[in-house]
Image 1 (cartoon, rainbow over the protein chains, first blue to last red):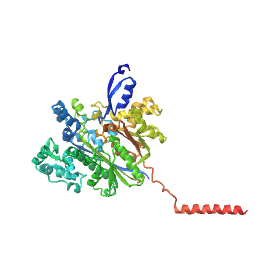
Image 2: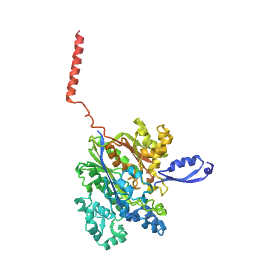
Image 3: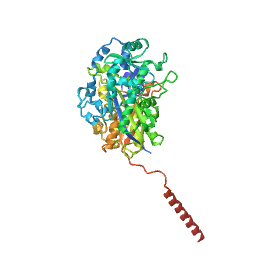
Image 4: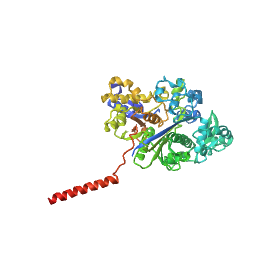
Length: 43
Length: 512
């Protein structure tokens, strides 16, 4: 968890995997600063 | 009143030249990296007509093979040759590119699609011989113009070129000089959607045995938008396709929801029928040029053919109860709400278990689930995994959590309650609905009972919300003709007589 503390994070989620907002919540709870988050679709 | 599914139509158009010229992965690459290795190698990875005919997932899509049969074929399926290679199937057909280009011209009512003379002369007879194309549609084909004029339109008038075997054979003109919503690019995209929707509509009506004049309403659920600069998504694809298909007594409207559009549209259509508003409603959608070759970079990198070379289309015919056809159960409807969130578990709960819980059902009370039916040949090489399988694993995990199956049963859940994916990655096209034709047949044959269609949509791609979306519904066997609601005249007379006798009895009792 500590690896994300104080780090700026860019999140690209996958709509058929783990979407951006879900990763965002995890990253924030680990102390990261989310600078960009989106979910992409490949289908 | 109940809404039943009379039949479905499924069509594919093989459009390899549109992969090169209209798929957004390719058009983007041409802008940002015009000399890329990918663009150089891509043409040699395109499939020919005979290869797409003998491709297992395509034969399942048009109904010549079943999903069960497909499940027995080792993956990747592009390495296998299907023993059936008919272009026509139980549910529809595969249309070769040359016929599809002529169909695009036939559905054009603003003289925007121009075809070259010799191309029309060479392919018109084959187009006219197509089982789904009647004389009214053939009559719409024009003789064509000179190749030089087409080249001029493309070079000087911003027309969108139409290629066949890499030869310029036509173009789609812009419908306005400066309105970007009527640009040649948009008109081309919309014309492809309309043409494939018309073919799906005709196929579905034939399969359902429903006469054109009996259709009262059409709902289009594709992912394109038609309109001008003053109303960008004004619509109405549904009515435009109904016009060409000859559905004179129909009107219609468009329903949108990204890939979840078809599930929303089918719930709407079933509700319209169940409410008695219309007796016959058809849900239809054409395909999407932008998604052609969407994962092509990974397919080329892995040395495989481009499987995303098919424009898809589907249509489903719903009518008032006929006492025989499978019905849409409007009580078991799942929906992803604003408050659901985007976590995969929450999404599946909202679409599957909450709807079942409201009806006192378990996950195992559903015989088959049809979530996103994307062909894994398209998605696995691109790192997106086997999408239907991922959905089955999540449903299975919820079933374990609810104590409805054992942990050891997760591995076989997909085989027992699922189907492999066979639909092209055309967004809304694979979204649950490819299974409807198969489910209807299996339910009528008494082999399946309750089947759930699940559509999921990526609303966040429109940048209006970060929300996900989805909807689901259940198809089940016809429960028989409903008793007529209300009370008969005879029963009313008996009730009045009974009341009078009781009244008389109270009077007599009062006298005593």
